[in-house]
Amino acid sequence: MIVVMRPTATPDEVEGVKRSIEEHGLEAFLSEGEERTVIGVVGDVEAISHLGTLPGVDQVIRVSSPYKLASIQEPGERTRVRIGAVEIGLGAAMVVMAGPCAVESREQVLETARCVQREGARVLRGGAWKPRTSPYSFQGLGVPALHLLAEAREATGLPVISEVVDPADVETLDRHVDVLQIGARNMQNFALLRAVGQSRHPVLLKRGLSATIEEWLLAAEYVLAAGNPNVILCERGIRTFETATRNTLDLSAVPVLRNRTHLPIVVDPSHGTGHRGLVGPMALAGAAVGADGLLIEVHPDPANARSDGDQSLAFDEFGALMDELRRLQFVRSSADERGPLPEERPVVASGIDELRDRIDDMDARLAELIQERASLALEVQRQRDPHVHGHDVGRERALLERAAGGTSGPMTPTELTMIFDAVLRASRSVQRRHAQSVVLREDAAVGSDR
Ligand code: PEP
Ligand code: MN
Image (cartoon, rainbow, N blue to C red):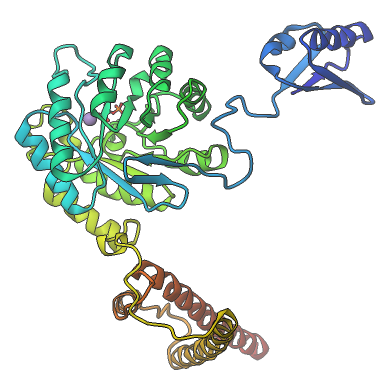
């Protein structure tokens, strides 16, 4: 913490601040400038939040973040949270959590669970207790819903997430579900946050309707400080002046959080938009900004849902969204989840040295081949108009698919695609450089003609 004194502060006032810091067991470092004195404080500054009120003090600036456990210690630090066998965060594949807003009946939840599992979701959502704006709206089935969710988990193998609204229910939910959700309306229900801090299950903490990112992270800090390290944050839209959407989905929160916290981040485009037609585009956008997961409402018959029907996807709509997420490679296909294929290319070698020699040799051949490929790409560029874009995305996609599916070996299709993606980007870079040089030469020629 840095305390900046007013230019008019007297030596007694500076001394008063220094004394107050030291009385709290902290160290004060004075730096006397031409115009004003600045005091650096080292130690736990929570106890000296009153410094700003002392005479002669102009500003108190916090240097370290107030959310010690939620904040990152170094750039890029990430945590991975386990939900049963599913992992979310730190390099894990993106996790889609899907299911009805509320559990309504046995058929509804089982049918939805089977659908979302088939389509590639990896966690089943379903509210047992619903925090509703009106006390006359459907409030959820309560404990019987938990039994139905457990049955759906049994049937599909999907772990289950459900919201807890009362600290007294934490133990009950703990017995039935795999992730406890704290809803937007309860983000600052500190008793509830402490209670889920005692749970052995991960907690998905939704952003409050009008919570700043700092308030949200401090809410996460309550759970972490109470002893539960497994917190997942969920951006679900905030209240703004805009009425065209139910909330304003703050996607910039994802990269902002990425710079501040190591916790996994999920985006909920259902509550974030309130309209079925907007869920798909915003789900893709959430994936594009780097969300670790998506939370999506799906219902067998949205028109007759007892809550949030307007924003719930029908089964075919959810299927189409999952296809799109797979096509854009935000979600891995089940073939990739199988892990390395059995060894289909036996390697005969006498030892590590020989293996390394062969790898070096192969790298040299690969480099030659890649250069040869680039020469072909360059020739394509020479033969086409340098002024038009000319970049055939469809052909590239087909090439990636062919490359990914055409061979067998220890690499998964996703890993192979990573390589071809890099080759294509590099080729495009060669082509673009050539096109630019042609256009520049033309410009120069036109210039000299004038
Ligand atoms: C929910 O996910 O069911 C829910 C009520 O969401 P929120 O707390 O974001 O409104
Ligand atoms: Mn809902």
